[in-house]
Image (tube, rainbow, N blue to C red; front, side):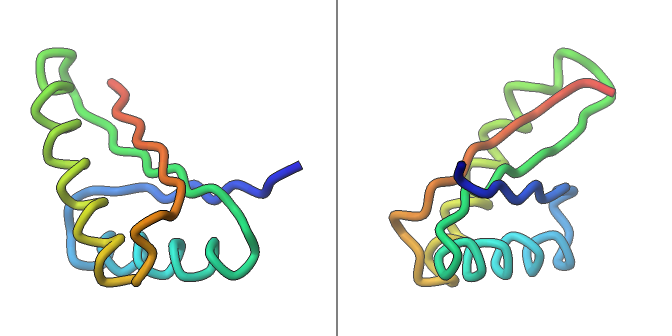
Length: 77
C-alpha cells in the first residue's frame, strides 16, 4: 500500500514550505501527496482550486519533482 501525506494548505509561505518538504520526502519514500485547502463558502471552491493548482505546480518546480503525484482537495468547512 502506497503511503500518503496530507498537507493542509492556506496559501501562506509556511504552507508553501510544507508542500515543498512533503514532495521531497514523498519522492524518497514513494508516497502520494494530498494537499487540502478549506473554504468557508461553496462558491469559493472554483477559485480556490485554480489558485491551489498554481501553488502546487510552483512547488513541483522548486522541489525538483515535476512528476510527483499530487492530489488537490478543496472542501467547504
